[in-house]
Length: 120
Image 1 (spheres, helix red, strand yellow):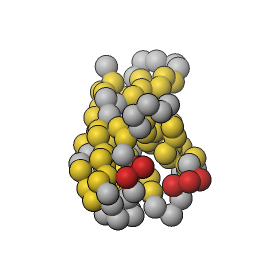
Image 2 (cartoon, rainbow, N blue to C red; image 1 turned 120 degrees about the vertical axis):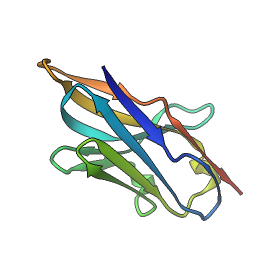
Image 3 (cartoon, rainbow, N blue to C red; image 1 turned 135 degrees about the horizontal axis):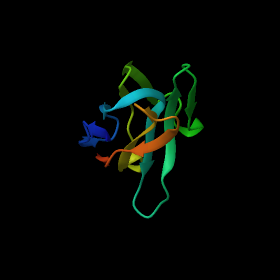
Image 4 (cartoon, helix red, strand yellow; image 1 turned 90 degrees about the vertical axis):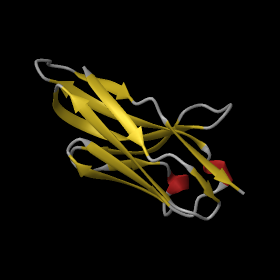
């Protein structure tokens, strides 16, 4: 089985910074993409940033300059969030596209989410 486990969510004041991380574990052959989505109350889940195995990042234009995703190692993705705003309050979900050992196909996996709350 494959698991994605997020950590680092917290309550921060507006203007502050926070770093969240996600680690993938299990019978993993390769990870072809890894990154973050978020979902605010009453809104659909939206892309934050996803990094492909080739190093290309697909990110939300509205978050450029404040949010930076990076791969710490093959199984870990980090999201550094700066100049946080109350509207960044959401559950942040780890996303990965993974090929499991002994499988010929890639599948999408999600973490359970980590809560980020920004107070004004």
